[in-house]
Image (cartoon, rainbow, N blue to C red; front, side, top):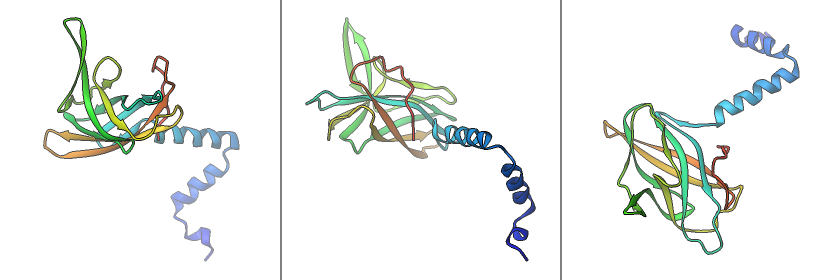
Length: 176
């Protein structure tokens, strides 16, 4: 019996069909598959998009990370860590008598099927005592811990793209 005769019929049909597709279309299919499987990041019930951090200036010890996070069910972001810094925290910013104040949050609510935006001027992730400068074009690795209503947790690994020191932050960076 020949090797191709051992191949299941459906697989042989797929291979035959794919073989007859012109190379340009094959490349398009490959690129589409890569885009689908690389952006955004999905981990079980959690989806994260557009994670980014600003490059740091010389001597700057802290930085922040922005992203969009969505949970399929009610949850809360309870922790963040990064190998790029000594510690990381969930923070919020608010105006108090005309003064912008930042404080640590114990957790951040993630209502089911609603995208929560973390970014400048509001809720965000802080990196403290950065181990080496954040350089434009590289990535900051993060691990987010999400706790669901049933008390189960899920850890999500994210790479936040480092954008230039100045700019709007509206660029949609690439992901793992």
